[in-house]
Each structure stands twice: as C-alpha cells, then as structure tokens.
Image 1 (spheres, rainbow, N blue to C red):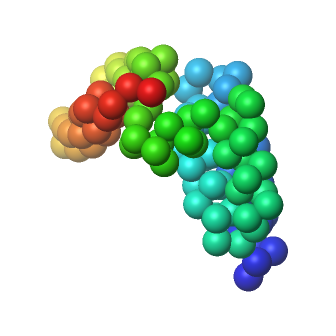
Image 2 (image 1 turned 90 degrees about the horizontal axis):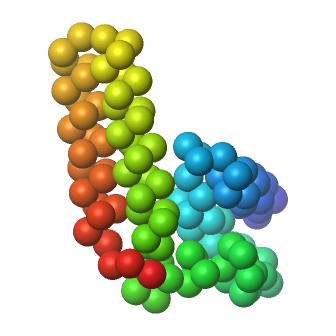
Length: 117
C-alpha cells in the first residue's frame, strides 16, 4: 500500500510540475494531494515538498492560512471561463450546459473567496 501511495504522490507532483508550464493544468491541487499523501507515508518527502523553493510556497500558504496565490486564482477562474466558453461553442444542450456552469461557478466562488497568499 505504501508503494502505491508513493506512486500516486509522485505522479501528482509530475502533474503539478506540468501545470507550472501549461496554463490549463492546475498546479496547487496536485501538490496538495502529494503533500497529504506524503504526510501519511513519508515525512522525508513531505519535508522536501514543503521546503522546496518553487513548489513549497503554495502548499505552505494553503496549510497555514487556507490561502491561494492571486495569480493562481486568476489563472483558475480564466481557465474555468474558457472551458465554459468552449462548452457553449460545442452546444451540448441546455441541461449539460447548466450543470457544468453551476459546478464551475461554485468552484470559481470557492477559489475567489479564499484569502490571497
């Protein structure tokens, strides 16, 4: 089980690093998942992640103050808006569009209402 959890954590870090370079891939949620898993199975890897100069600040901000960096907030809301616009353009019908719009609105509201790091 430990090997599986470590594999998931490192895969999540890989996705988080990809998110640093690709604007539509989130970074912080993947890093938070990795930190949570590492906290249970490897304190050494958890310390490495939390103390990492590039990856650690967002994890520490979330853990300490449940805060999200302002640029990450903007990127997240812009990505959600773009996703919704693409869905409108694809015209899936009113019900799927309404469901997706409601979910994205709730997610955007959550992100916006968190304190800024």
